[in-house]
Image (cartoon, rainbow, N blue to C red):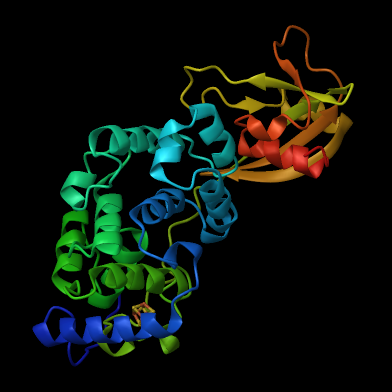
Length: 330
Ligand code: SF4
């Protein structure tokens, strides 16, 4: 990374003070109006942090209110059936998160009397809560002075300092610059800066509140690794009879989306000539071209006829939900 000299870099006491002041002032004026910032209820904060893991804000916005409407408290979530939780989660992907949330909600109700633990250390004892999530919930909901590091924070820090940081260094530096007075706002502010200003490919340095403290000022931002995205074709059959749709359930012991419901899968190249629908779908590092053909599934496939009114109650894979919406079945 190329660097420029700055008057007060953040590895000085005064530099860190300025960093906090500029960042929080900017956050107070420019923070996005997001549903989970309405209040500091730990359940709402926790839900948003889990949903935002590896998922875009726009996708989370669609699901967040729906989930809260169905499960407004940790108690209602803990009492729900897992299949209902997965059904509401459907479309967000990474279903392990929903399973872990369900388990964690039961732990909060059964072992903590329905009240969320208030420190990062205790929160880490809950299923599905790692160092980042524990710190985010503890700082935002309970004002505990613990720093967070995610991809956005790390990028901001690396650019500010003009050098690559290993994981442990990132956490130590994030701790050293954290605002003790407003830790939750500070953590949200630095993540917000990474998500909206200090962007991976084209940082908007001219509007950045930290420009005067930054050693790189966007230099080297284009030195990006080539995309590892792969391309694949996949096919499904869509069979409708007496108003019902034929769906199959994924095996309960597979790693990816166990127990979820989907359309019967067939080879993408076989179905392409007969496809009535062609859509694009991305999952982690793979871009799928999805072909859907109308007609019966291959012989021998076991499944169930499901009426459209029942479909929203099933835990569907996100792709199946997308296809059924496109076909105007749900
Ligand atoms: S947006 Fe530019 S000035 Fe601000 S932290 Fe990122 S690289 Fe530095």
